Image 1 (cartoon, rainbow, N blue to C red):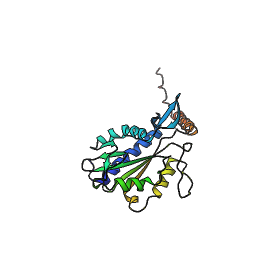
Image 2: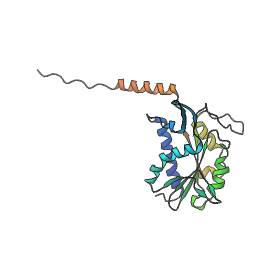
Image 3: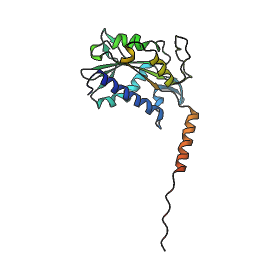
Image 4: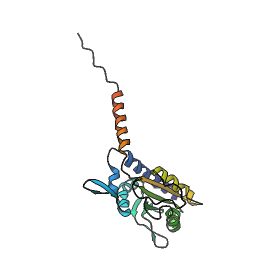
Length: 211
C-alpha cells in the first residue's frame, strides 16, 4: 500500500509507462484495442471513454496487487469527476485522459486536472495527465502558441511537460500512450535484425563419432 500521495502517483505512473511500453514492443497487437475496425482495417481511434475502459482493463489488475483500486469517473471536491480515480485507501489519485485530437489537449493538465481534481485533500495536489497518441496521420489539435505540432508520442510528451507552469511542474505527471499503428518500415527492420541475430548464434558442434 502506498504511504503517501507521491508514492501512489509514482506507482500509477510506473504501471502506465509499463503498459505503454508493452503496447509498443510486444509481439502482439495491443494497440488495436484502441481502434475501430472495418473489414479488419483499423480506420479510426475509438472514443475517449472506450479507450479509458480498455486501459482500465490493463491497469486495474496491476494496481490491485499493491492494494490500490482504479475505477472510472471518480468524484472529487466540488462534484467534479476525473476520467480515472485511483483509490489507495486514505489516498486518491485523479487521472485525466485526452485523445490527441481533443480541443483541450494543451490546456487540460492545469485547467482541468489541477484546477478541478487535485484540490481534493486526499489527492495531496497530485494527479496524472494521460494522452493517447494515435500517430501523425490522425487529427491533432495544434499548439496555440504557433509552435510546430509534435510528430511522435515522445515529442508530444515533451511539449506537454514544457507547458506546465508553477506547482503543476512538481505535482502533475504526464504520460503519453502511443496507440498508433506500428510503422511497417520499422517492423521490417526489426524482423531483419532478429533474423540476423539468429544466424549469428553459433551452432553447437556435433559430437565426434567414436571408433
